[in-house]
Length: 125
Image (cartoon, rainbow, N blue to C red; front, top):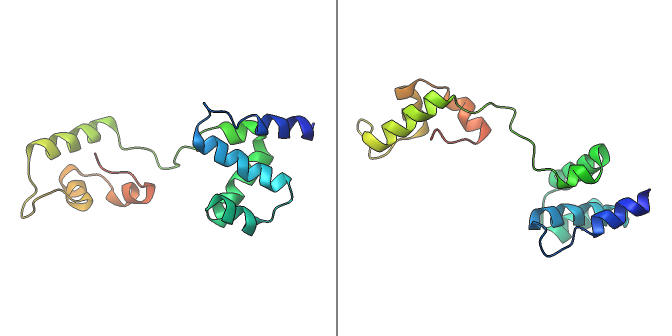
């Protein structure tokens, strides 16, 4: 079973495979080869939590965990109506006493929680 899984992962290294999937498979294959976390971090030029994330996803879901896109944010996106208001304000108005909209100014003008937006890494528009 393990040999078949490793050969499946090794088969991911094809010309038409997205680079990030190849990179994830490389992390898992290096783990299977017995490389330590620090060595994998150096090889992949990434952080320890990232190595652990892909090792964990492989253990949880197998090859499908490596192939799957990243998981969606637990913070829901802004509602469509709010996004449309933000776009309209950005395109048609300038903020008071400023040359461009900041997240907090836009949140105040459109009444959305800019902290939740900032924590999720989203932009208001």
